[in-house]
Image: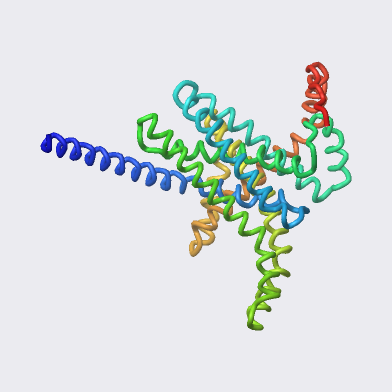
Length: 330
C-alpha cells in the first residue's frame, strides 16, 4: 500500500511539474507575443484618457473601470474565440475584417482632426449622423460606449498581432497564451491610464500636505502641468488612432497584392534611418508612423462624406424598418 501511495504521489508530482512548465511556457509565450503588439498597446493607452475629459474627479476611475471591463469582455468573449476560429476555418477573412476596423479608426481620427480645424462644419456633420446612433442614457454612457467600440478595434489589432507571434501549434495552448496576453495587456493599459488621470489629484494632495517646500512645489508643478499633458495626450491619441488605422489599411492592401503604400512606408523608414543613424530605430518608427498617419487621414477624410451622405441615410432607413423596442417603465 505504501509503495503504491508513493508511486501515486510521484506521478502526481510529475504531473504538477509538467503543468508548471506548461504554465511557465504560456506566460513566457504571452509576454513574448505581447511585446510584438507594443505599438498598438501604446496607441490604446494614448487614446483612452480622452474619454474621461470633462467628468468630475470621482467619476474618472469608475469610467475607466467600466471601459477596462468592456475591454476584457471584448478580448475574451468575442475576439479570442473569433480569432482562433477564423485562423482555423476562415483565415482569408481576418484581413478584410481588420481593414473594416482600420477604416473605422481612420474615420474617427479624421473626424477629430476635422473638428479641430473646422469645428462648425464638424458639428454639422455630427448632427447629421446623430440620428443613426443608439441613444445613450447619459453623456457618461455615450463616452463609455464609444470607448469600448474603439477599444474593440484596437484590441482586434492587438490580438491578431499576438496570435501571429505565437509559436506553438496546439490549439488550446494558443488559446491560453492569447487569453493571458489579452488580460495582461488590458491590466497594463488601463492601470497606466488610471495613474495618468489621477496624477493631478496626487499633485493637489502633495501641494497641500507635503512637509517640505520642495514637495509642495512639486505638487503644484504636477497640478499645473497635467492639463497641458492631458491635452497633448489627447492629440497623441487622435494621431495614434489615425496611424494605426492607416497601418492596418496599408498592410491589408499589401496582403491583397497592392504593395504601393507599403513600399512608400518602407522607403520613408529607410530614408529616416539613413538620415539619422544615431537614432536610426526611433527615426524609422517615426517615419513609418507619419506615413501611416497620412494614409489614415486621407482615407478618413474620404469616409466623412461617405458616412454623412451614404452610410448614415441607409442606416436611418434600416432603423425605421426595424421593430421598435418597448419603453421600460420608469
